[in-house]
Length: 485
Ligand code: AMP
Ligand code: MG
Image 1: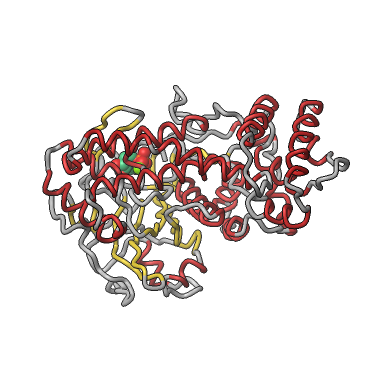
Image 2: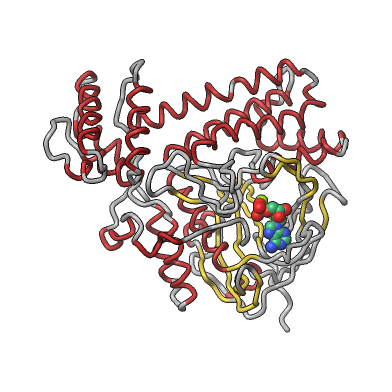
């Protein structure tokens, strides 16, 4: 057997913040036998200095056959609002780092076997969940929303038991760091104040250097994370993205969208939409996400309190979440409506639209895209009106929107192109992910590659793949996604 390939570019690391066992441990992978490519992200590969074409050597590495021992970390967290105790990298091994134009990126395999933090799990991931994570990471990047990235998916025939018997895959994830709120909560909960301080200092030094000179650097860090989280929530809401499992262990300290599981982009707009079928109470419904983001920042704040040492300052920092979120959301919806100059009653216009879309279960993505094409003069409105059952209510709203455009003397050309740059034509609807998954199982991973390419530039027209902009077909009505993957 050949010795494992040791890629020169991959810099070995042993964890973060100088932490050692039991917090961070070296854990060998269990490589997949007879792996094959399901996806290779050529453009991300190139930014990491890797070849555009996948090689046999990288197939080995990304299927878990690695020369140096990777590491896994412990974290804890609140799941569905309840303290869940110890979790950790149960199926994620970090191999090392690659440099993307001078910025070091952690390279992590998800699904490469059991770790000391696997608990009852098998350490594996299946084709379905790996393809979904790959596609959604890249779809979010294409939309300009902060996210972990995905470099590749490797498939194998290894059977894995889920609701049915499935096959194992590994998705390779890329991010500056996968540190979560749950890492801080873990050390705080166990009274490991030294580790908590080490971790906090490391995160400030590497990612939030501007906080280092603040009078209270840890408070400044919390404020910065609150700002990023609130902004991220506004970005999710503005594209109709539901994460599905906003537990604190799935919240990135860098404000990235992290851990793609039972996520979904809304088709028919419903404020109460729940994409995760395991979420019976709708804790993580679309309309709840901003509030949950705040709650999660509260959990992070509690964990950092021993270092901040000022409860009143902590409360004030948390109180700034809401206005930050609202400002980002208002700005995002103003852009979606093509409004260049803010006006005091804009929130009312947006609120009226949300009610209209909700009551009519209008397709969120199609509506804003069609609206982007409308001229200021009333007339050829059918492309929008046909999306809304209650035509009269739609006309009323369009009248108010047009009056608003008149007020700022909006010019059609620049406004329409600005709207087309923020209202995507293509989002990763569930049925599209399902189409790519089925094609991969039928031996056609090229569908996945094609879909990823379209989602990478979701604001552009893709005439050859026009069909992928459509609302879901009938067969997709019964699709369900849940936590188990
Ligand atoms: P998630 O809900 O996917 O974010 O995972 C929550 C926790 O369960 C994390 O600690 C994961 O590492 C762990 N986990 C999820 N699925 C598996 C699995 N198949 N094997 C081992 N650990 C898992
Ligand atoms: Mg997770």
